[in-house]
Length: 272
Ligand SMILES: *[C@@H]1O[C@H](CO)[C@@H](O)[C@H](O)[C@H]1NC(C)=O
Ligand SMILES: *[C@@H]1O[C@H](CO)[C@@H](O)[C@H](O)[C@H]1NC(C)=O
Ligand SMILES: *[C@@H]1O[C@H](CO)[C@@H](O)[C@H](O)[C@H]1NC(C)=O
Ligand SMILES: *[C@@H]1O[C@H](CO)[C@@H](O)[C@H](O)[C@H]1NC(C)=O
Ligand SMILES: *[C@@H]1O[C@H](CO)[C@@H](O)[C@H](O)[C@H]1NC(C)=O
Image (cartoon, rainbow, N blue to C red; front, side):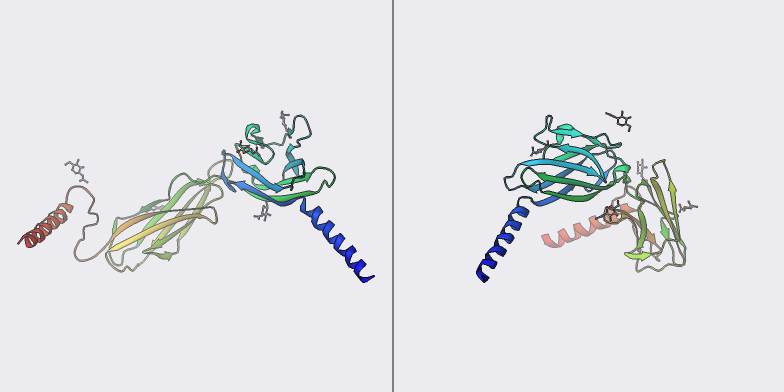
């Protein structure tokens, strides 16, 4: 009696496992998950039917179906007219769909729904988000009021970056120490809501370790984008220091001459 009961249980468990098994490992890959506006995004639906035939693969943006692949139909692919979605038919098939010319409106949740053929018709669905952005082309531009500062001076500088959506967060560091911006401006540049950003810095009086000031401005969209620019500023000392060895004419000639003399001197010592 007891054994029979166990057999029954085992059969139920076995059936549950096998029926669940015929559709497994369903996952959605969005390449890239963050895409520049106007570019293309590829959505790949991975699934393992364990030799069962595919009945259909349906693609959704939110709750709207926009593409379907069903091998038993003729033609096997069907594209639904959803505004803003441009499916590239040549690069879409039973495992992926390619979206061309993506725009901001497409940011959101995409899903693929896999259905196995008879007899199970088991269905599984997975979702992932796509984010359409417009990232600024260049790097932040730092403008300092002066090229060098003396003790007690007020350091004034701005950092700005062209339009982006979502807007970037700008921040300053001075010799690797974070410094608070004294003003922030965000301006909407176009009808899509892309924003131009600028921060200002005013430090008075500021401290520095030695004759070098490294002002860095970092632009970030958390998890998506990060870029920075640096500006080397001279800081007042009693003796003027050559700021750049690489610059052309003028005072750097002294440095060059000095180095040359030093080298010749060492060569002389070595040859003796
Ligand atoms: C898709 O729908 C838009 C309006 O929503 C319409 O203007 C367009 O002609 C339709 N395209 C096709 C191929 O049906
Ligand atoms: C689907 O199309 C892409 C691009 O054309 C191709 O790389 C991929 O191998 C195709 N997959 C299948 C299962 O046909
Ligand atoms: C996906 O986007 C929706 C809104 O569009 C948001 O509510 C959800 O948290 C996002 N999911 C992930 C995993 O980012
Ligand atoms: C920084 O920006 C503000 C406001 O746009 C402007 O008044 C100021 O002159 C700028 N400072 C520098 C150093 O460019
Ligand atoms: C260096 O010298 C050249 C020609 O002698 C001149 O054209 C150039 O402007 C000078 N550059 C600087 C930074 O003084």
